[in-house]
Image (tube, rainbow, N blue to C red; front, side, top):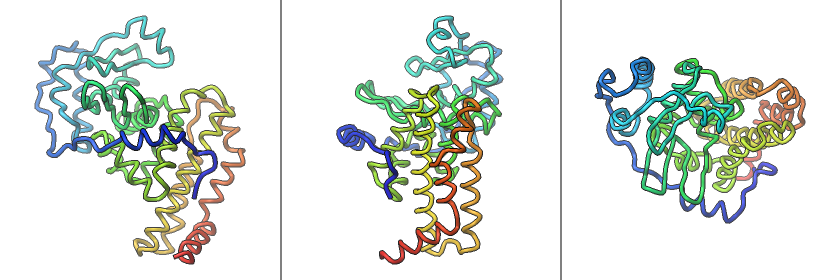
Length: 314
């Protein structure tokens, strides 16, 4: 099922498909052995690092964490950074492994520490930060990465979510992939695995277009009409993928009819819990025709109809 308006330039699609490849996997558990107290970092920042390591060490296997800690620097945010990034209270320089923090450190430092531990410099021209892949020609999944990083910082440290729409899209994607898978893919920079998984229930072109469309949210952050348009396109794609996942699982006998309503209601609830930058966007979204179409798709009746179509076309 192709979602309306989820499109990508053919040349861009072919380039991304060719360049987004599996990265070197993290084979063994990367234990953190560095003595944080001996790091050349201001003492006031060390408790945050200790808390981060304590709460993430069980569920995440970060790549080369000791090397990153040994070279990490944390500095107060210069005025120039505030002028360049007025909506952010902190930022991370991936090239020199340095965090610049502002006054609201409790709401920002854990997000940036996730960036520190999920950075991977494949070579001089290719950089990974969680799901984000950057080289001299492209930059993809930046907003997906920011959204999921915000989601994790909120989940583990109760940090404020700044990338609200992106975090919601990331959460819905996580429901489809599974929380453990999503966290593992994030820690190991495995955007490729996400594309392969979603493509089993849509298409490679549609999946890459989905990820590229999330990046467009930064352009239209203050444009209510366009933001909602993009959100609906993304949401419709995820609903279609989710239905295909359920149909496939049901066809293989992984769960029965009694489970269907539970799965559908869980996903439907996520679409009514969207976080928004302002009330105007929320009101406009909840009364949009595409949103109503999404809630209709997540009904038991629609699931049964889609299942019937799949069975009849076998």
